[in-house]
Image (cartoon, rainbow, N blue to C red):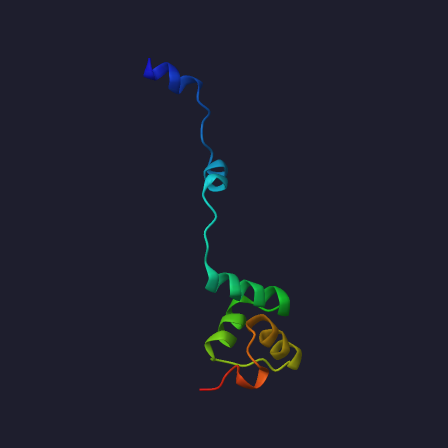
Length: 79
């Protein structure tokens, strides 16, 4: 009887498997992605800003980072 049940079940595709996965929650990646979107920069650039490796040259990017994080512009890279 078990074989007959399997005969009638739909086959899983890779796309179906992927779409069936639960949505993951990754706040750090989501934050970097938000910066990428808002500032129109690459993942690497956004991550470098967040990690303090580099700072934006464009003042509008500094303002946007301040808005997104809630940290005053002059305190974004202190410490």
